[in-house]
Length: 372
Image 1 (spheres, rainbow, N blue to C red):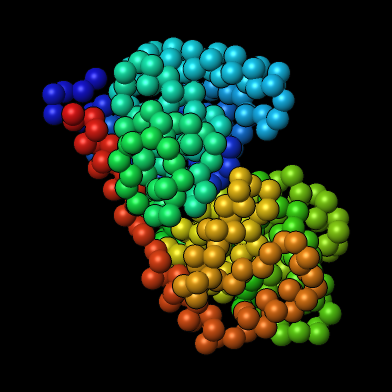
Image 2: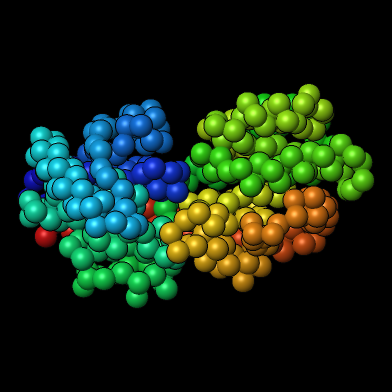
């Protein structure tokens, strides 16, 4: 436990479900550890955090929590009872690990630990990664001591009186240490043309993969400008995508999951991706131009809101999934990746949006809460 100066305390991170919650949380965890605090992580063992967090050497505390039902009185009553059970489990975990503060990072699993901290009289904070806040953070903002925001316009969309700090989305600085040569070697690319990296996030995305297949068909037809192509399909989609793609040709690579994304970014001339806040923060940090296809299957269409900010700055092109013609879009992507002047302007705009000190800012504020 801590001394009177507030150092060396135990901070519990809570949340997850997707890389957009988990990877910023890991960046914050490292920043907190640099200040001398011990970090534990509460999350769903069956989701991404259950695999990624223990591999980073952090103490992982499995927790279950209900997802809020959109309709039905009976379903909402069941949700309330299940939430109370989850809060009780979180209270026991916080006590067992002598946690001093809880930092919620979003996702439904983050709500019980933050609410448990409130019932125990422990300080807490939440980080909202998106323009439109998720349900968990909308609930927790009412009782937390500090709200961290990626976007200033989110401030008015959250209830409660906790102080708001616009800090951006935490990025691990190792994203800047990518080795393009290592990626080229791993993917077996001849490097005879610029590379397009197609990635649907840690879980994959069917629409992004369909665009990847359209790009494969285009480059094999020889009808457009030359480019090389790497598709990160997501583990669930890999087998089906390989079957549909057929034998890969020189200058083509397909992987289910990429745990060395900094290398992939370093090798890419253009990235085609969803528009989760974590992905956008990484793209800006490394200064890579992008074509963004926001997921429409998210709360209040927040990915489009995220993406439009990059588009307005000139760092990205936004393509909406509804009505998208994959073949036509593949042509446009091939033309863009072969336009050095356009890519240079987009890269400069992306770097201008980068915020590399976010995790340290969050850690410093959390440190201040612990010193009260």
